[in-house]
Length: 377
Image (cartoon, rainbow, N blue to C red; front, side, top):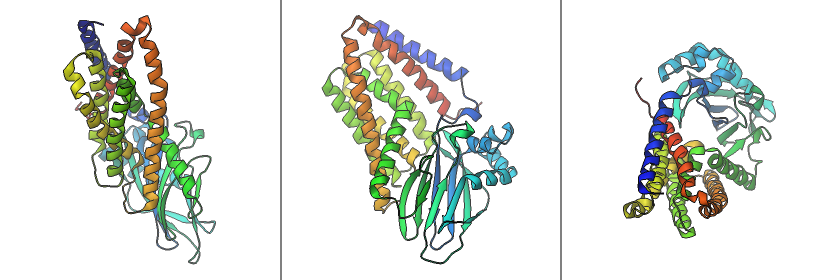
């Protein structure tokens, strides 16, 4: 493909992305993905327990069967107002779906204070604090169960609840899913914890389309196996560094910054592919650019897991398992896509196929960028 045609393709991708961003901004009620993750921080020094839940705002309000005025609320102030107005319905929904027991006897929940709202990635999350009064004497054991946002509600599927706990003299984390909805503190083995967070990390990469498109853009620009190894290694090292630092609470960058930059990273790498690898300046800067954007992708991974406590082997084990899951999924994607791209380059379609793949990547990523940046109406 001539340089003029490559430039034309890049301009076309930018224009298409601008059109998508202007015409197809999603409604608030549809802002969540096909799946969601609930977060629960559970603490207690005796029989009674404190639980801080973070649940996707619009999904919570829809699941509580509230009116569109509630789940389509824009802005933190209005969302807080709706949470206060609909406090009883929200409590009723959450306490039916999330439970704490002590020695197999249910603990009585009471919502403490008012709900809060905080951004997490691309969505607003309601923050709810509950006090669970548990009957019984010392020496017993707690169990935590979550059936939040089940498939039967049809709003989302495959919900996962990430639980962080400091209970019964133990500290750790676990992933609760429909097939395994209950955590009995002290019963889960380290091998089970490793498997849970390994799968969580792999799923986050595979189902995180922005990360997959970034990898695809990198592979389109790679001509040799050596290019793939060097580029993938730089990306892996970068996102591993920031993932661990952010997840352990050492680095804190707001999602409002991280998410648009992740979208922009795909645009930059993909447009560089359209402009061609023959440009020595692009080739010289490719690796530093990949490393820099890899740092931002690591912050995005950490935002998904949101474990920000340090000093615990159990939490460190969860973080490492999650990161290894990411790397395994990334390796699998590269192992599948790069040979296919190599075969494609040996066909007559090699003259136009890379641009045909890259143009929609640029367009979609530009749409994500403008959608994630809070622009004035």
